[in-house]
Image (tube, rainbow, N blue to C red; front, side, top):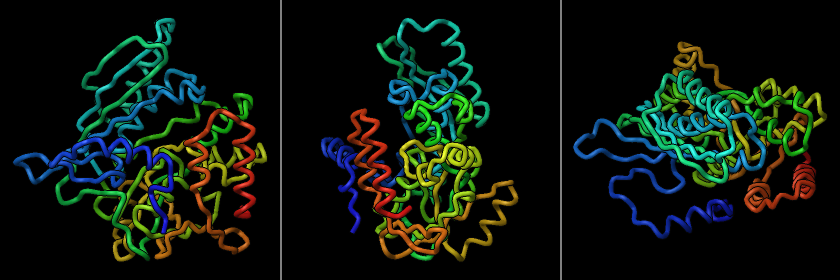
Length: 351
Protein backbone atom coordinates (compact mmCIF):
# COMPACT_ATOMS: atom_id res chain seq x y z
CA UNK A 1 0.00 0.00 0.00
CA UNK A 2 1.34 3.40 -1.00
CA UNK A 3 0.68 5.85 1.84
CA UNK A 4 0.41 9.63 1.54
CA UNK A 5 2.31 9.85 4.82
CA UNK A 6 5.36 8.29 3.18
CA UNK A 7 5.98 11.66 1.52
CA UNK A 8 7.46 14.42 3.71
CA UNK A 9 5.49 17.20 2.03
CA UNK A 10 2.21 15.38 2.70
CA UNK A 11 3.26 14.93 6.33
CA UNK A 12 3.89 18.67 6.63
CA UNK A 13 0.51 19.53 5.13
CA UNK A 14 -1.28 17.09 7.44
CA UNK A 15 0.53 18.53 10.45
CA UNK A 16 -0.71 22.03 9.63
CA UNK A 17 -4.25 20.90 8.87
CA UNK A 18 -4.48 19.06 12.20
CA UNK A 19 -4.60 22.44 13.95
CA UNK A 20 -7.50 23.82 11.90
CA UNK A 21 -11.27 23.49 12.20
CA UNK A 22 -12.77 22.27 8.95
CA UNK A 23 -15.39 24.46 7.30
CA UNK A 24 -18.82 22.82 6.95
CA UNK A 25 -19.04 24.36 3.47
CA UNK A 26 -15.86 22.73 2.12
CA UNK A 27 -16.53 19.91 -0.34
CA UNK A 28 -13.04 18.51 -0.88
CA UNK A 29 -10.86 16.87 1.76
CA UNK A 30 -7.13 17.48 2.28
CA UNK A 31 -5.03 16.46 -0.76
CA UNK A 32 -8.14 15.57 -2.80
CA UNK A 33 -8.24 18.63 -5.04
CA UNK A 34 -5.93 21.18 -6.67
CA UNK A 35 -8.27 24.00 -5.63
CA UNK A 36 -10.46 24.28 -2.55
CA UNK A 37 -14.12 23.68 -3.43
CA UNK A 38 -16.78 25.44 -1.37
CA UNK A 39 -20.55 25.10 -1.46
CA UNK A 40 -22.48 28.35 -1.74
CA UNK A 41 -25.29 28.77 0.77
CA UNK A 42 -28.62 28.78 -1.00
CA UNK A 43 -27.17 27.90 -4.41
CA UNK A 44 -26.84 24.23 -5.32
CA UNK A 45 -26.19 24.96 -8.98
CA UNK A 46 -22.56 26.04 -8.52
CA UNK A 47 -19.57 25.51 -6.26
CA UNK A 48 -16.88 28.11 -5.54
CA UNK A 49 -13.30 27.09 -6.40
CA UNK A 50 -10.46 28.98 -4.73
CA UNK A 51 -6.69 28.64 -5.08
CA UNK A 52 -3.72 30.55 -3.69
CA UNK A 53 -0.14 30.09 -4.85
CA UNK A 54 3.15 31.91 -4.21
CA UNK A 55 6.25 32.39 -6.35
CA UNK A 56 9.16 33.11 -4.03
CA UNK A 57 11.46 30.11 -3.61
CA UNK A 58 11.92 29.91 -7.39
CA UNK A 59 13.19 33.49 -7.43
CA UNK A 60 15.41 33.11 -4.36
CA UNK A 61 17.10 30.04 -5.87
CA UNK A 62 17.65 31.78 -9.21
CA UNK A 63 15.28 29.60 -11.21
CA UNK A 64 13.35 32.66 -12.43
CA UNK A 65 15.47 35.71 -13.19
CA UNK A 66 13.20 37.65 -15.52
CA UNK A 67 10.39 39.69 -13.91
CA UNK A 68 8.10 38.69 -16.79
CA UNK A 69 8.55 34.99 -15.93
CA UNK A 70 7.92 35.63 -12.23
CA UNK A 71 4.63 37.38 -12.99
CA UNK A 72 3.59 34.95 -15.72
CA UNK A 73 4.02 31.89 -13.50
CA UNK A 74 2.19 33.55 -10.60
CA UNK A 75 -0.90 33.91 -12.78
CA UNK A 76 -0.62 30.54 -14.51
CA UNK A 77 0.01 28.63 -11.28
CA UNK A 78 -3.17 29.91 -9.69
CA UNK A 79 -5.39 29.39 -12.71
CA UNK A 80 -3.92 25.97 -13.46
CA UNK A 81 -5.30 24.71 -10.17
CA UNK A 82 -8.71 26.07 -11.16
CA UNK A 83 -8.40 24.28 -14.50
CA UNK A 84 -7.71 21.01 -12.68
CA UNK A 85 -11.13 21.18 -10.99
CA UNK A 86 -12.89 22.32 -14.16
CA UNK A 87 -13.68 25.82 -12.88
CA UNK A 88 -14.81 28.78 -14.96
CA UNK A 89 -12.60 31.63 -13.70
CA UNK A 90 -14.04 34.75 -12.10
CA UNK A 91 -10.72 36.54 -11.62
CA UNK A 92 -7.56 36.80 -9.55
CA UNK A 93 -6.14 39.07 -6.84
CA UNK A 94 -2.39 39.57 -6.64
CA UNK A 95 -0.06 40.33 -3.73
CA UNK A 96 3.35 41.71 -4.72
CA UNK A 97 6.26 42.07 -2.28
CA UNK A 98 9.45 43.54 -3.77
CA UNK A 99 12.73 44.62 -2.29
CA UNK A 100 13.33 48.34 -2.58
CA UNK A 101 16.37 48.28 -4.87
CA UNK A 102 14.56 47.09 -8.00
CA UNK A 103 14.08 49.98 -10.43
CA UNK A 104 10.99 51.13 -12.31
CA UNK A 105 11.92 49.15 -15.43
CA UNK A 106 11.91 45.92 -13.41
CA UNK A 107 8.52 46.73 -11.92
CA UNK A 108 7.07 47.75 -15.28
CA UNK A 109 8.24 44.52 -16.89
CA UNK A 110 6.66 42.53 -14.07
CA UNK A 111 3.37 44.40 -14.51
CA UNK A 112 3.46 43.65 -18.24
CA UNK A 113 4.03 39.98 -17.43
CA UNK A 114 0.95 39.92 -15.19
CA UNK A 115 -1.10 41.62 -17.88
CA UNK A 116 0.08 39.38 -20.72
CA UNK A 117 -0.61 36.20 -18.74
CA UNK A 118 -4.14 37.33 -17.89
CA UNK A 119 -4.87 38.39 -21.46
CA UNK A 120 -3.70 35.03 -22.78
CA UNK A 121 -6.31 33.33 -20.56
CA UNK A 122 -9.07 35.91 -20.99
CA UNK A 123 -9.13 36.67 -17.25
CA UNK A 124 -8.71 39.80 -15.15
CA UNK A 125 -6.80 41.02 -12.12
CA UNK A 126 -9.47 42.36 -9.77
CA UNK A 127 -7.18 43.94 -7.19
CA UNK A 128 -4.45 43.09 -4.74
CA UNK A 129 -1.71 44.44 -2.51
CA UNK A 130 1.79 45.89 -2.93
CA UNK A 131 4.39 45.89 -0.16
CA UNK A 132 8.16 46.11 0.41
CA UNK A 133 10.09 43.07 1.61
CA UNK A 134 13.64 41.77 1.72
CA UNK A 135 12.95 39.15 -0.97
CA UNK A 136 10.60 39.00 -3.95
CA UNK A 137 7.34 37.22 -3.19
CA UNK A 138 4.38 37.10 -5.59
CA UNK A 139 1.08 35.53 -4.59
CA UNK A 140 -1.99 34.92 -6.71
CA UNK A 141 -5.42 33.99 -5.39
CA UNK A 142 -7.72 32.88 -8.20
CA UNK A 143 -11.35 31.90 -7.90
CA UNK A 144 -14.04 30.52 -10.16
CA UNK A 145 -17.25 28.52 -10.36
CA UNK A 146 -17.88 24.82 -10.98
CA UNK A 147 -21.31 23.38 -11.84
CA UNK A 148 -22.57 21.52 -8.79
CA UNK A 149 -22.85 18.20 -10.60
CA UNK A 150 -19.46 18.35 -12.34
CA UNK A 151 -16.92 18.79 -9.58
CA UNK A 152 -13.56 17.24 -10.51
CA UNK A 153 -11.23 15.83 -7.87
CA UNK A 154 -7.92 14.01 -7.77
CA UNK A 155 -9.78 10.90 -6.62
CA UNK A 156 -12.20 8.77 -8.61
CA UNK A 157 -10.30 6.86 -11.29
CA UNK A 158 -10.83 3.13 -11.82
CA UNK A 159 -8.70 0.32 -13.21
CA UNK A 160 -9.00 0.35 -16.98
CA UNK A 161 -9.44 4.12 -17.27
CA UNK A 162 -7.26 5.81 -19.89
CA UNK A 163 -4.53 8.13 -18.64
CA UNK A 164 -4.02 11.44 -20.45
CA UNK A 165 -1.72 14.45 -20.38
CA UNK A 166 -3.01 17.74 -21.79
CA UNK A 167 0.32 18.66 -23.43
CA UNK A 168 4.03 17.84 -23.57
CA UNK A 169 5.94 17.66 -20.27
CA UNK A 170 9.48 18.61 -19.34
CA UNK A 171 10.04 22.29 -20.07
CA UNK A 172 9.91 23.20 -16.41
CA UNK A 173 12.51 20.61 -15.51
CA UNK A 174 14.65 21.58 -18.49
CA UNK A 175 14.87 25.14 -17.18
CA UNK A 176 15.44 23.91 -13.64
CA UNK A 177 18.23 21.53 -14.62
CA UNK A 178 19.88 24.17 -16.80
CA UNK A 179 19.93 26.55 -13.84
CA UNK A 180 21.14 23.91 -11.36
CA UNK A 181 23.97 22.82 -13.65
CA UNK A 182 24.84 26.43 -14.53
CA UNK A 183 24.67 25.77 -18.25
CA UNK A 184 24.86 28.68 -20.71
CA UNK A 185 21.62 30.59 -21.24
CA UNK A 186 21.27 29.46 -24.85
CA UNK A 187 20.98 25.79 -23.80
CA UNK A 188 17.42 26.48 -22.63
CA UNK A 189 16.49 30.19 -22.49
CA UNK A 190 14.14 31.23 -19.72
CA UNK A 191 11.87 32.71 -22.38
CA UNK A 192 11.05 29.15 -23.53
CA UNK A 193 9.30 28.54 -20.22
CA UNK A 194 5.89 30.10 -20.75
CA UNK A 195 3.42 27.45 -19.55
CA UNK A 196 -0.30 27.97 -20.09
CA UNK A 197 -3.02 27.12 -17.60
CA UNK A 198 -5.41 24.76 -19.38
CA UNK A 199 -8.60 26.61 -18.47
CA UNK A 200 -10.46 25.89 -21.71
CA UNK A 201 -9.42 22.26 -21.71
CA UNK A 202 -10.41 21.87 -18.06
CA UNK A 203 -13.96 22.93 -18.85
CA UNK A 204 -14.14 20.07 -21.34
CA UNK A 205 -12.27 17.53 -19.22
CA UNK A 206 -14.66 17.96 -16.28
CA UNK A 207 -17.43 16.48 -18.43
CA UNK A 208 -15.59 13.19 -19.00
CA UNK A 209 -12.72 12.69 -16.52
CA UNK A 210 -12.76 10.46 -13.46
CA UNK A 211 -9.89 12.34 -11.78
CA UNK A 212 -7.55 15.21 -12.58
CA UNK A 213 -4.46 16.98 -11.20
CA UNK A 214 -2.13 19.57 -12.68
CA UNK A 215 1.55 18.78 -13.28
CA UNK A 216 3.03 21.81 -11.51
CA UNK A 217 5.24 19.48 -9.42
CA UNK A 218 6.39 17.44 -12.42
CA UNK A 219 4.84 14.53 -14.28
CA UNK A 220 6.04 11.54 -12.24
CA UNK A 221 5.39 13.27 -8.91
CA UNK A 222 1.85 14.04 -10.07
CA UNK A 223 1.29 10.39 -11.01
CA UNK A 224 2.76 9.28 -7.69
CA UNK A 225 0.38 11.52 -5.73
CA UNK A 226 -2.60 10.30 -7.75
CA UNK A 227 -1.77 6.64 -7.18
CA UNK A 228 -1.41 7.21 -3.42
CA UNK A 229 -4.77 8.96 -3.28
CA UNK A 230 -6.61 6.41 -5.41
CA UNK A 231 -4.69 3.30 -4.31
CA UNK A 232 -4.43 2.41 -7.99
CA UNK A 233 -1.49 2.56 -10.35
CA UNK A 234 -0.50 3.49 -13.89
CA UNK A 235 1.19 1.73 -16.77
CA UNK A 236 3.01 4.26 -18.97
CA UNK A 237 4.95 3.38 -22.14
CA UNK A 238 8.16 5.43 -22.00
CA UNK A 239 7.83 6.93 -25.49
CA UNK A 240 9.71 10.11 -24.70
CA UNK A 241 9.26 11.83 -28.07
CA UNK A 242 5.53 11.56 -27.40
CA UNK A 243 5.53 12.48 -23.70
CA UNK A 244 7.98 15.37 -23.68
CA UNK A 245 7.51 18.86 -25.09
CA UNK A 246 9.64 19.33 -28.24
CA UNK A 247 11.91 21.89 -26.47
CA UNK A 248 12.58 19.54 -23.55
CA UNK A 249 13.19 16.59 -25.86
CA UNK A 250 15.69 18.62 -27.89
CA UNK A 251 17.37 19.86 -24.70
CA UNK A 252 18.03 16.25 -23.66
CA UNK A 253 19.33 15.28 -27.08
CA UNK A 254 21.65 18.28 -27.34
CA UNK A 255 23.10 17.90 -23.85
CA UNK A 256 23.15 14.09 -23.46
CA UNK A 257 20.68 14.20 -20.57
CA UNK A 258 18.45 11.18 -19.85
CA UNK A 259 14.90 11.83 -20.99
CA UNK A 260 13.45 10.60 -17.70
CA UNK A 261 15.05 13.60 -15.95
CA UNK A 262 12.41 15.78 -17.64
CA UNK A 263 9.57 13.74 -16.08
CA UNK A 264 10.99 13.04 -12.62
CA UNK A 265 11.99 16.54 -11.47
CA UNK A 266 9.87 18.74 -9.23
CA UNK A 267 9.41 21.75 -11.53
CA UNK A 268 6.45 21.21 -13.83
CA UNK A 269 4.58 23.16 -16.47
CA UNK A 270 0.88 23.22 -15.46
CA UNK A 271 -0.38 20.56 -17.83
CA UNK A 272 -3.36 18.48 -16.69
CA UNK A 273 -2.96 14.79 -15.87
CA UNK A 274 -6.36 13.11 -16.02
CA UNK A 275 -8.17 9.82 -16.54
CA UNK A 276 -11.18 9.04 -18.69
CA UNK A 277 -13.31 5.87 -18.44
CA UNK A 278 -12.98 3.78 -21.63
CA UNK A 279 -16.71 3.96 -22.33
CA UNK A 280 -16.41 7.76 -22.57
CA UNK A 281 -13.19 7.86 -24.58
CA UNK A 282 -14.66 8.13 -28.09
CA UNK A 283 -16.96 10.98 -27.18
CA UNK A 284 -14.13 12.71 -25.30
CA UNK A 285 -11.82 12.48 -28.31
CA UNK A 286 -14.52 13.87 -30.58
CA UNK A 287 -15.28 16.76 -28.22
CA UNK A 288 -11.59 17.52 -27.83
CA UNK A 289 -11.09 17.56 -31.59
CA UNK A 290 -13.96 20.01 -31.93
CA UNK A 291 -12.08 22.62 -29.86
CA UNK A 292 -8.64 21.87 -31.31
CA UNK A 293 -7.44 20.06 -28.18
CA UNK A 294 -5.05 17.14 -28.78
CA UNK A 295 -4.26 15.43 -25.46
CA UNK A 296 -1.49 12.87 -25.16
CA UNK A 297 -2.61 9.35 -24.29
CA UNK A 298 -0.07 8.38 -21.61
CA UNK A 299 -1.20 4.91 -20.61
CA UNK A 300 -3.78 3.12 -18.51
CA UNK A 301 -4.90 2.84 -14.88
CA UNK A 302 -4.13 -0.52 -13.26
CA UNK A 303 -5.38 -2.09 -10.04
CA UNK A 304 -1.85 -2.47 -8.66
CA UNK A 305 -0.85 0.77 -6.84
CA UNK A 306 2.42 1.26 -8.68
CA UNK A 307 3.87 3.41 -11.44
CA UNK A 308 5.17 1.09 -14.13
CA UNK A 309 7.14 2.36 -17.10
CA UNK A 310 7.24 0.21 -20.20
CA UNK A 311 10.77 0.78 -21.50
CA UNK A 312 11.70 0.74 -25.20
CA UNK A 313 13.11 -2.78 -24.68
CA UNK A 314 9.65 -3.95 -23.62
CA UNK A 315 10.75 -4.43 -20.01
CA UNK A 316 8.51 -3.03 -17.28
CA UNK A 317 10.16 -0.99 -14.55
CA UNK A 318 8.11 -0.38 -11.41
CA UNK A 319 9.51 2.90 -10.11
CA UNK A 320 9.13 4.37 -6.63
CA UNK A 321 9.06 8.17 -6.54
CA UNK A 322 9.18 8.50 -2.74
CA UNK A 323 12.99 8.75 -2.47
CA UNK A 324 13.14 11.55 -5.06
CA UNK A 325 10.13 13.41 -3.63
CA UNK A 326 11.62 13.33 -0.14
CA UNK A 327 15.05 14.24 -1.48
CA UNK A 328 13.63 17.48 -2.88
CA UNK A 329 11.69 18.18 0.31
CA UNK A 330 14.91 17.83 2.31
CA UNK A 331 17.19 19.46 -0.30
CA UNK A 332 19.78 21.65 1.43
CA UNK A 333 21.50 23.07 -1.63
CA UNK A 334 24.11 20.34 -2.17
CA UNK A 335 23.93 20.13 -5.96
CA UNK A 336 26.49 17.35 -6.40
CA UNK A 337 24.65 15.15 -3.90
CA UNK A 338 21.35 15.86 -5.63
CA UNK A 339 22.63 14.86 -9.07
CA UNK A 340 24.30 11.73 -7.68
CA UNK A 341 21.08 10.65 -6.00
CA UNK A 342 19.14 11.17 -9.23
CA UNK A 343 21.59 9.10 -11.24
CA UNK A 344 21.58 6.33 -8.63
CA UNK A 345 17.79 6.31 -8.66
CA UNK A 346 17.71 5.98 -12.46
CA UNK A 347 20.26 3.18 -12.39
CA UNK A 348 18.24 1.31 -9.77
CA UNK A 349 15.19 1.28 -12.03
CA UNK A 350 17.33 0.69 -15.16
CA UNK A 351 15.96 3.78 -16.90
